[in-house]
Image (cartoon, rainbow, N blue to C red):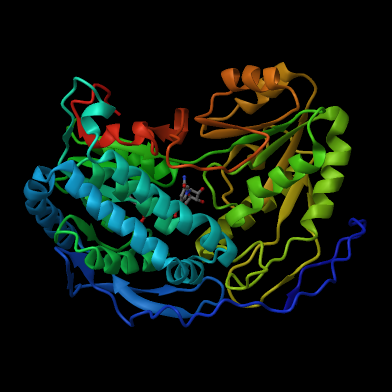
Length: 492
Ligand code: NAI
Ligand code: MG
């Protein structure tokens, strides 16, 4: 065990408290040695492969396919073939399959949660209590719409688009799969989905659910691989691309698809402002700040990564925050007591380290609570920067790690001005006792979601998506159905 340097002047919290290990058993999951491509309800032997790891231990978990452009085009052709029958089914029949998938996910949720934590590094309590329940909830929610499309879009004859190509990231692997597949299928489309290269395993286990639910072959196809596989899917003859990931790749896809007639939705990065006014309930706000940035190691597009505190309460808020940070337990993702797990990949860890070094160099003050980080695997201690200027890279760029930048403001106008001073616009948080102030702020913040006196709350009925460089199109709710339908009157 390597010990992170202890900093003096840390808050007087008994950080030496030890917890008995409470590991969740891995036995519930059986990982195959090798996975192929899931196309037409069958496993196809891939031409190329790579190894997927556990980021907490760097232990290899399985060999998975690196799908080539030819293989991707084949998957799209199979999805095209399946589209005729699937789209002709009555909505109530499609709903039955979606309800089945939702129930199977609930039944097998412990298995999925363990696998998600193993392959992605997130704490088991998060995959168990957040990712899995929400993934099932999405299937339940969209199952309910499948036979009500005419009511959802009255007088518009909603029709499915055809084959949807879906590319997802590694921060919420199964949940992003659910966000993508559930509305697409409810609307009558078939899909080819590409998981992120570092986290393919829950998507591959989902293929088992698809079979168990007896979904007609070819309705859901899963092709694993890296960015080149994603690019091949963008270029394949699909009718729509739904992408969640980095703004850079989103921009590349946008220019690639210009003039192609393919529909596109993009859910990209963020640099959310979490704004604490002096009349807020401070302890509650501190919990919200912690949840906003340390949840899922900060690998969250809507993470509250810029904290704006009203100057008059900045000192007590930052003090309490540091004290609270010292109680966060960093370590084994499969331990039920773990609050902060492993960083998803070496590449992501290097990106975090680079930006944190830039923060120090530019003159911000860093605080990390004393904590022991395991020797193997990818880890980063929860970090907060104070004395941050708006021009610093740590205030501008998405770090996508457990790193918070604290800035201050004096008036509500200044808070709005500073919060909106970003190329992104995905989410924001407001902490105040005054209802009128919440509404005043929500009206002015250029963000797709504004949370009031809470943070990182999700519900399948509530649309989610961004402004500006955070992308366009909405997922969740009725809004999330529209991008999978023609004739809905709104082009996403
Ligand atoms: P990425 O955007 O490269 O990866 C996301 C998905 O896109 C993966 O499935 C990847 O294989 C695929 N992809 C990569 N290049 C592609 C291409 N040219 N065409 C089609 N698909 C492609 O994100 P990456 O490199 O994993 O992370 C870099 C940064 O992006 C992170 O540090 C974070 O700031 C941001 N990010 C934001 C996410 C969000 O939820 N908004 C999710 C993941 C990353
Ligand atoms: Mg990338």
